[in-house]
Length: 140
Image 1 (cartoon, helix red, strand yellow):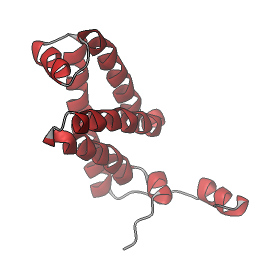
Image 2 (image 1 turned 45 degrees about the vertical axis):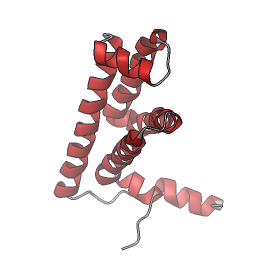
Image 3 (image 1 turned 90 degrees about the horizontal axis):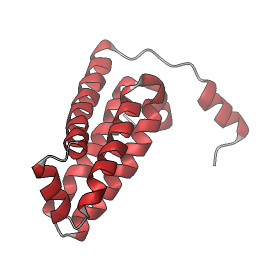
């Protein structure tokens, strides 16, 4: 548990500038995730046949497709905006956790995909935001 002094130091510590390479790597990873999840959200909202069939195959009623699409699009938009990117990442983690649970429930081997996407969501933030690196330190 963090003491008040440690917590204040963590929150008030000055961010060290992120290298240009690291910043661009984070932007590219985040951009790929944003594009992929936007596509997924849009096909759900538009009720494209593949989205309807896939959702039904996973055991969900057709009536939840559009709401799921709007939830996903909201999370992605929050993730894409720098000021709300962390909130978006947290919400996307929950969404992708549900996707993982659904894939495991139907015994689909693709359960790894939402896990990888979740890692990419946080990896993109980790690469482009020094504050995330302060919260999730990686030993060299």
